Length: 162
Image 1 (tube, rainbow, N blue to C red):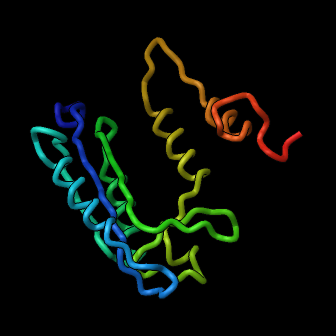
Image 2 (cartoon, rainbow, N blue to C red):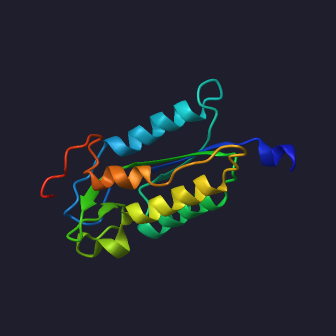
Image 3 (cartoon, rainbow, N blue to C red):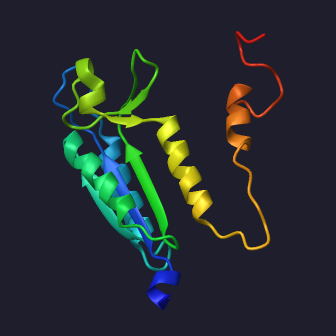
């Protein structure tokens, strides 16, 4: 392996959505400012040292492509930071969706960015499995056990469970 492959890069993708075409979504001032300020701190070589890319008030397709490209270009040793600022909407199916400039509240699945726990979990486990633990091991069951308990970090049963 070359030195470039073993030394990681510090990369950040900052996404802000503050203006929306759907009248049901109130415009927000903070996301764009948040991304600008966070980008300045992360990008400062003396503080964060990240290579920062900002995606501001863009349509869903462009945001999804930016996220996919960001992770696809990542290498094992990289530190990747994804930050999203804007509205989050809980849909009728219980899913959480991050809104973009082109989100239509009536058709969230195709016009917003879904936050799927199963997908995120699968990606995280692929990352954990890619690590060479030499003389060690890792456990994959801790997170889902916590979720089954209700995700509160204690042993009390979740509401509505027996």
